Length: 125
Image (cartoon, rainbow, N blue to C red; front, side, top):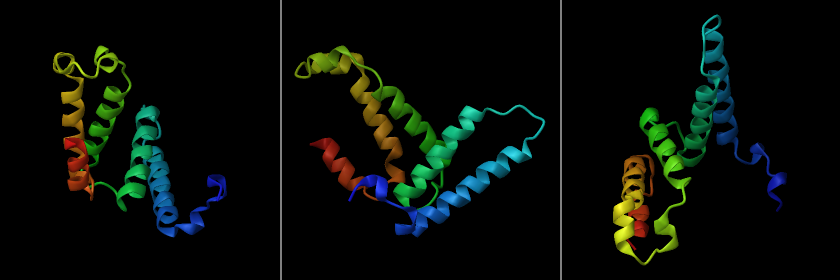
């Protein structure tokens, strides 16, 4: 099946929750009429609301922590470091601290995952 052919009717829970999140987003904007808003941040938050609903089945209980962990993951994953050129030199990994920061970020996001024990096992391999 081609992915473009997928429809939300095939998964009504995502369709309903996506609609509710969209309505909440519009209502939030309408409440701030006449004041300055950070539309980029609001769209970023909307994206993570939809992602968490699709991935976990509902909104995260601690949305701010989830968003902070996701932002940190994106920030850490976006760079290219010397340790990528020499993966066998463990000293470089320690000096660059990227691996440690990524591990901390993954561990912060663990409470949001139903399969956190499987993820931990994969990370430790």
